[in-house]
Image 1 (cartoon, rainbow, N blue to C red):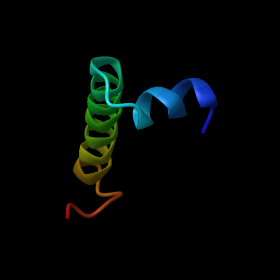
Image 2: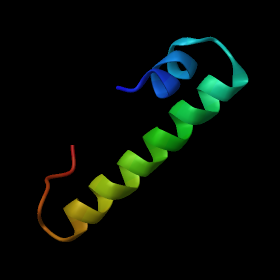
Image 3: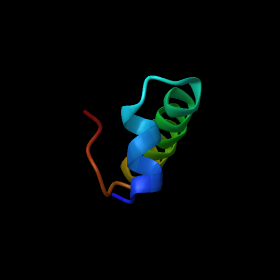
Length: 43
């Protein structure tokens, strides 16, 4: 993971929390799309 992403994710700052939330939401949306297409099993 590039340092410019790793450092904010590991720091206890608003920016780090916002970045984590955005990455989490993006991952969740991608997995929901895969599940809807039958390419992943919801868990």
